Length: 168
Image 1: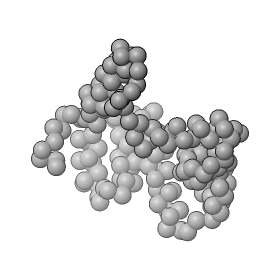
Image 2: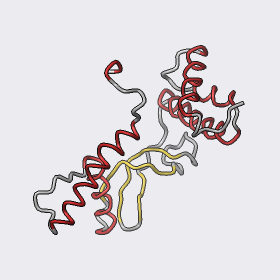
Image 3: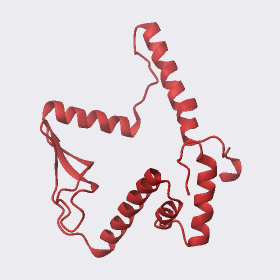
Image 4: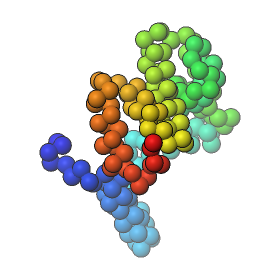
């Protein structure tokens, strides 16, 4: 796949030049026709999910969805301020998370590592610290060692330099 991909054509380019363009063109056609009959617009899984959640809120159905929400004790042995992805009942009063309780050490370790990666990434962006950015990269499970981590960070930085602060 990589050999056939255009590495300079990012995921963002794909969305803007592909899906976004086709959606705007179809919307223009529907407006011009004055009807959505025979429209090729499809929300997709995420779009349908959003509509289902909105329906649950508007009609207070208290349906169960998986949502991203502040932990606030739902996972008892995890940072209460961390945003976690857990089941919740959604209705007119918002999302009421399901209490998970204590999670096993292995899963907690993975979650702790992910949250540390996220926090260090933000800290690196705010401070411009190369060392902190490298530490964040090294917490990613796809990075096997320091040499690979440094190469990945340097490549990411070079490719995205215009969007990142100067790392020193």
